[in-house]
Image (tube, rainbow, N blue to C red):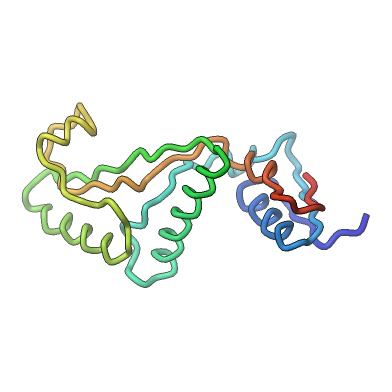
Length: 164
C-alpha cells in the first residue's frame, strides 16, 4: 500500500489531521491502539465549545477560539453532528464585582464574541432557575458537542485514501 501519511491516534486531533490531509488529496492511514476511535484522551475532553471571552485581544488563542467555534458550529450544522448552544452565565455575586464583569464584556466584544450582554433580573430565572444572584453577563456562544471524533471519520467529503 502506497501512503502519503500515517496519523498515530484516532482521537479528535488525529482524525482532524487525517481529514485535513485527505481533503488535500493525500492518502492517509490512521493508526489507533484502542478498540474504537475517540476512546483515549479525547473521551475525557469536556466537549465544551468555548466562546473566546477570556483571551487577550489579538492573541492567537482569541482569534483561533472565535474562528474555530464558528467553523465547528457550521460543520456540525451542515453534517448533522449533535451539539447545543447552551450558553454561559457569568455571575456577579456582589456589586463590587460589576467592574470586572463589565471589563469582561468589553473584552468579549473586542474579541468579536457575539451575544454577550447584560441580563435583567427577570431573565436570570429563565436561564438558570435556581440562581437568585445578579447576573450581569451572558454569552450564547458556548456550546457542547456530542460523539466527538465519530463524525470526522465518516466525513471523507469525496476524498479517496482515508482509512481508519
